[in-house]
Length: 423
Image 1 (cartoon, rainbow, N blue to C red):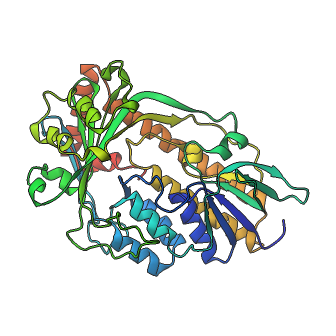
Image 2 (image 1 turned 180 degrees about the vertical axis):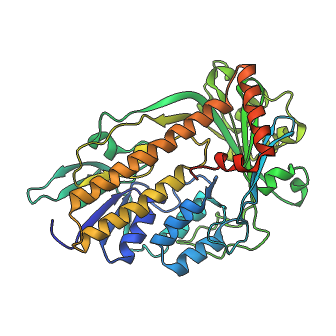
């Protein structure tokens, strides 16, 4: 393998942009190709939670000043996670050890749009928008060529698929890799948070992520985006007057087995109809939880089918690889998908930099990265799927045992760490 390398990344999502920053900072030639036509196309406003794992990866890959700006642009750090039942009875509360905004390991809620803007800063000239990837082929000199729908192509030494759960690159590289439906469907939305609505939001939701176990296999997750400690100061990547970085809201997601919703095609309903569908399954929930759904802005409400990847063993390593959801897509019920993608990015960056510097050969370095990623990535997939099944158990005994386990852990501090494992 010649030195230096040229790396091609397909997809300008969280993991792909983090990797691009890390490579650029180490002077490795890199280009990112994104099918959307601008930084704001089809970017949902829902939040992510950047854990200590994700923050460590971002610190590794971003210039320190940019990481500090990103941390300041995030919402107020979460104080803890609280598990409740549908009547707002506490099951388990875990305080996070780091809640100061300046602490590098604080749990940071951040909207996907703000995070993407933060990660695009400094990558002008690196990210190419409006380039839909269609496939790759080997070149005679051992490099790889990526082709795009507009007829253009680009050649590099390494091709990285960071193009999300529906990865076109994965489908060519690993046609045996599967992503399947779990039987769970979710409806999500945002309730604007202001001085009027804030007083009706249950206190645990204002403190941090709040999973709520309902009856009959129904589940609600809620978390707030607030900027009371400071206001984000990140400069926009491009003019977008409709975008408000300082918007405060409560994000919620209601989920259940698809059969609970009857024969209705949820994906075809509008926002108000989706709110009604969720509320129809919440007749005996606490009124304040029902209000989160009732007061949601209908334009923010959507439904999606929850899917998960099926773990696969290592494959023969070549100069095309994957990161994040492109391989180990997982359900949202552990809240670790983005953090796992960031971990991938930091690890792959280290592998590629070592090759670029002549300290390692490409295929062995990529093979080591892939073995490690398969191990922890699919472990996260299994953990996330297990949480999903636990939260949506329909049998009364299973739900009772889950709640009992939470209550026991609430009284035994060492057990609480188990519930935060893998973040």
